[in-house]
Amino acid sequence: MGIAAGILLSMAGGAFGKTWTDRYGRAFEAEFVEMEGEQLVLFTTRKDATAGAFQAWAKTHGVTELMVPKDVRPIEALPVLGTGKLDYVTMGEMVT
Image (cartoon, rainbow, N blue to C red; front, side, top):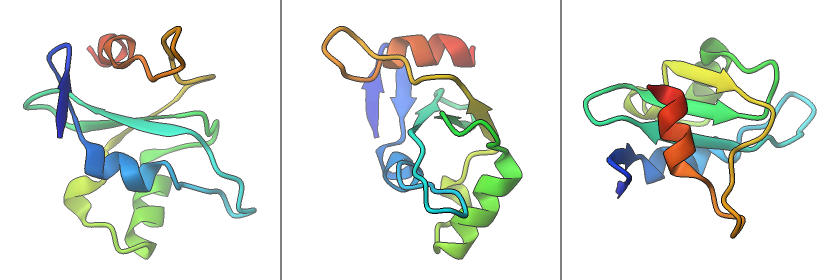
């Protein structure tokens, strides 16, 4: 776990979320943000993303239920800083 601007980030969850693909093998960008004491949220560029679909995918890939988000939010693009790194502050604001 890492902390950025008061947001607790699940690094382990992000590792498998970044490999989420559709049935045609196309990969989609995804990132997790976990607010302290709250549930895990998955932001993804996959337009048809749902929590149920991700939960089913995770189950078939041996991911424990504790690491699977109940909140999946499709967005046009993941927010990035000028450096090209993910903007966790903006994602945290999108959660609250």
